[in-house]
Length: 195
Image (tube, rainbow, N blue to C red; front, side):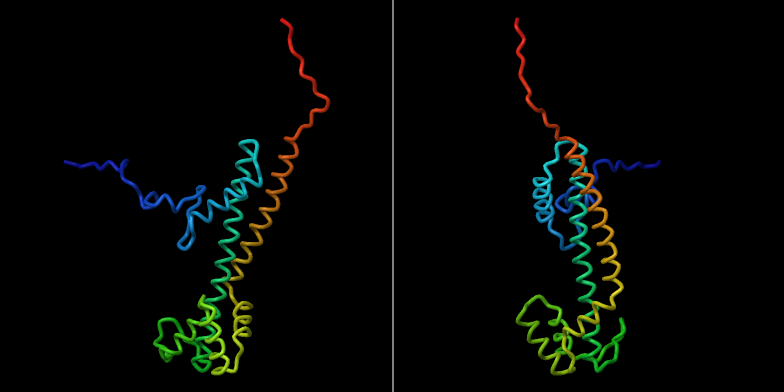
């Protein structure tokens, strides 16, 4: 006897967390649904769409803004990863540390490299001073080299340019639609029927 399974009542992984979906676009780890909803509400209030089509264009503009911000964060994270890698190499006496390889960095060296890209200002400033003393390289120079030679950042920068171009064209179309919907009625009179 063959048994059939009815999956209609089973939620998929995609449906498991509705807070991870906003305006039809999945959010990635680290993205806050409240931030996206705030962006959507702010821009929708600014755009003030009057028709269903204008509303659809305005929602697409919100998506472009969100995705541009996402790719800017990814670009910055790619640069930080490249910076971290270069700093590790310099701390390791100029010898690159290959992935999966046992490296010769001490726990203090690893902490120094971590603090260079950390978010705590005091730790980062102390790490930058220590790094300069140990390597004779200013951390900003290493960061600039990382930013100038980061394929991941370049890919995100290209995507940002494409999205900004699309946003500009869509914004123009949206503005033209709004202008076309504004019809001025001059000297209108209300006529009441007798009867």
